[in-house]
Length: 167
Image (cartoon, rainbow, N blue to C red):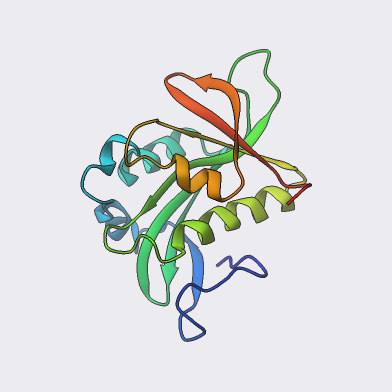
């Protein structure tokens, strides 16, 4: 279980936000998690993330987001990945899925804060994220959290970064 220090609880002290590892006991619930209608074009399903984590165990960090006993989301970080051969190693947010009907309650912010805390713990000071552009996409969310466009693209996705040293 991981709860970043100082993370806000979106619904008060009676609920406890935490991250959990994906295990044989919770993998089916993880795979069943769905984002809102129309958001599927912006984020891959959890099952794809788990397959990617399986083939990239040295860089992937998949976690389930719980509010008490309720599964409300999935987040996966990456560590020390080069986007191209001449690139510097990057760490950041690989995937964020907050369940339909649970969005807008602070769970996404909690998950991103948890990833940032883990990146800090590993001695890094910058967090990278990519997102697909489009109406209803995640860009406003990431910009509100302090991420800034770098001017780079990773495939067809915008690259954003957050400087933890200044945060």
